Image (tube, rainbow, N blue to C red; front, side, top):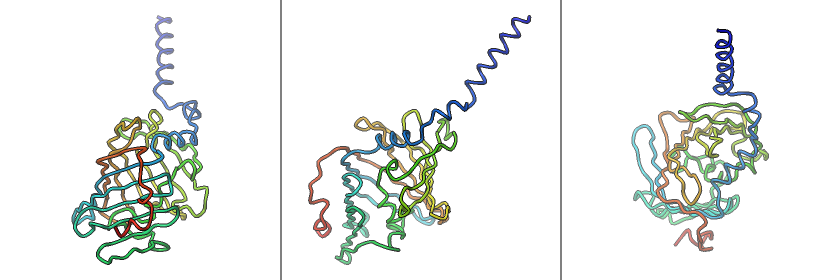
Length: 253
């Protein structure tokens, strides 16, 4: 009887170790390295995305279609194809500058200063969000916060602190699946610490050897009853992009 009881206690002990998030497992999380692995999975030298921006303002839903070409972290070009009101609108980012062209006015303008904080096409994204296309591991220092479940997935929650005081979002919190190095959720905060944006990453697929989300859901937490869903219909990595796509001359073509 004593032997059976001892075996029961031993089995219970090992079960407890396996089923609880141990200190050892938390210590095993190298937050900065995990963030670098997230970047390695998502980033490529060049990228093409054709997708839909589905904007829900709480009263009506409208869909914008767009094609985007990206090179590194400094250059991107986006061409909006529909609806009719936005058709032909173009955006060009070169390093720290963002230009926008609208066919209705036949003018290109430099988006700068307070304009960067305005809503992009009435969505939950701002023009500043368009400028945030950079490697997180280069721009932020990461620390491990805790483990938390999103659905059935046990995520490592990382706190990110900007290395540069000029960075738009001084702090971020990301929920990372440490098994496949994918981000499932992100929160972005202002310099004051006020929570501004929440983003969910869904529908991951393996594309050219990378695990990439087909859907991102943005929520501007300063607005009520709104959300913007970004659907990626076509994703291509490491493609050749004509140099002319990153010249201001393309805006009026």
